[in-house]
Image (cartoon, rainbow, N blue to C red):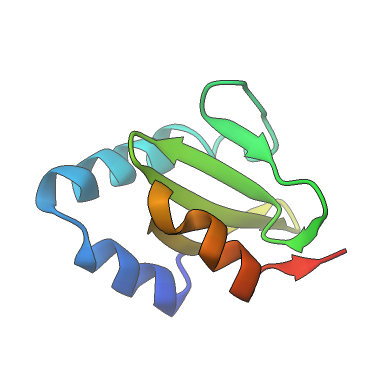
Length: 92
């Protein structure tokens, strides 16, 4: 499930990046939402929300898991991810 802000974020991406993000979302979080790997999925420490980050090339998909359902909060560039987390992330 994409938050309205994430839908807008997705629309702002270049077509190639948008396609890569959609493929990664279909492949990773919905089927193994809590799976972590050093390469793509990371549990974000010190934050209550978002809980996870999915790396897709130079794009970061920030999401939570609520009742075994994935809620995508934002889709931001690697460059903007730290700033987004500082402003929008909820600390534990």
